[in-house]
Image 1 (cartoon, helix red, strand yellow):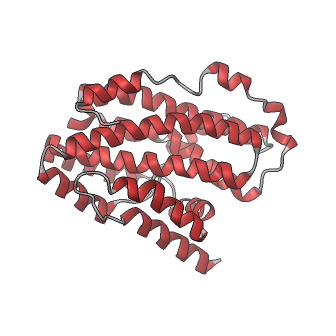
Image 2 (image 1 turned 135 degrees about the vertical axis):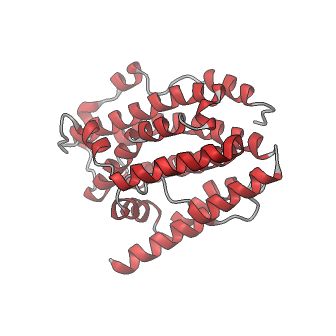
Length: 277
């Protein structure tokens, strides 16, 4: 899909049906969850994914303070995006509960409350700096979003493949459909914004090359983030998966030709984690 304007992207997105509807969630055979084994190594991964989905509200609130978040088209997208991400977290939490993993009744508040003060201060500082740059930073915001959505989607695909749990796979297929729509929005708007100026391209590439970290980093601990990445993407096939489905797609954006930051970072984490085990 090659959209000409952000409005066209939004119109496409709004036509996409929700996958995780109440009907879909009710149709899941929750009683079958315990009929299939769930490797314990995937429990921290599911908790991390649940928490990251829940923490999108924190990111949403910060972005709303910037020119990017105040853009009427992006703002309208993010209202639905935020709601969908919250549902993803809630469904993952229910799966954990049905698997026999108990979570606190107020787990969502606990997740948000666990974010460090330093992370919050850093985010506020970044918001202030992006406001100084103005609308030219929108391309960077959207490119970051595209990377996060692509990597999240591939994380879910890898989990579905590795866990070999049919009920979890059904849930993840629903989540993946919504995450794929998010990816299309972010990536399409990023392309449109990047095409506006060479300055935006150079700024976005510079920021991502030097400052990109995996989704959830900072809000969650490095140990949790590294564990999740190493569990899902260890081995040559895992790194090839990231290169093919994230890095090569990112390189298709204006100004991002040859950028291997995502693959390099994931490879570094996997190597360090493997060498310490």
